[in-house]
Length: 307
Image (tube, rainbow, N blue to C red; front, top):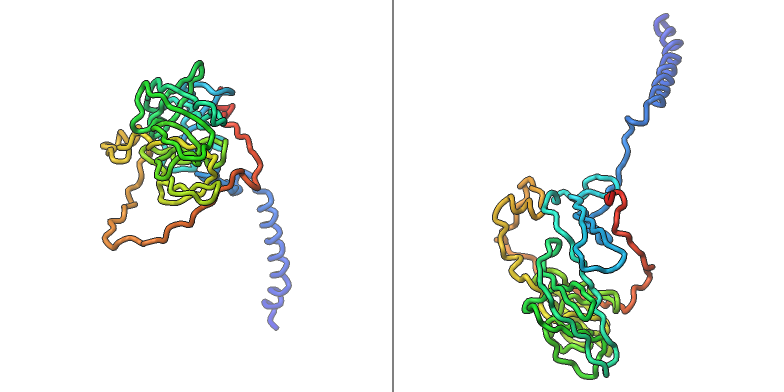
């Protein structure tokens, strides 16, 4: 064995161990600001969050227009951008819609009557809004196609043995309406308020009765729902039918609507090779109450934004 190889065996290992200790110590001394932290972004469309605006609701229902804070696609807590296609836009006031139509339940009592006082356009939704009043109570509802100022609309929560002949704008339970009636603002659970069919020009159709207390409704998406007969619904088709056919016309108008410009890489398919034929969805049966879920109260006001 040569002298050089003997020196290498004696001194190489201590030198390598010393270098490793130095590097480990230097890694521990690194400050926290240089470390990479994972930011968990919330998902859009979950629990009713669209990250478009925050409406500052009051404690009691009012017909006064409510103040709105535009988010521009950002999370109000962290400020990080969640939705890319939102930004800018004209700031509109929000008209508080009263989704639950209240009326008598006894069949011997006459239905509640409300008069349409005004029909106006709301910048926060696609269909028109109608201001109705009865006595000293005022409320906003979604306007139907043929609804005019001065019309009288009726509301009743009773289910007679035979179907009634409703007028447009009236609100009755699904079990009281005849087959083929066009409806909107349908309740998913009895007494929870209309949460289905809100978009402009849309409507649902009462198809048939499923059982003694179930009614099948065909949604605008051609999907069928089986709902309880005591769920309330408004008769008629929603207003502003030509909303989807009106072209935007310019990039400036698109910015006023709150749409952020895109890269232009995405192109719509031409349909030259046809479309895939899919079987219809099965009938979705919805119970009378929310099962397996606790009632959660959400506070829509954000204190830091109110200052």
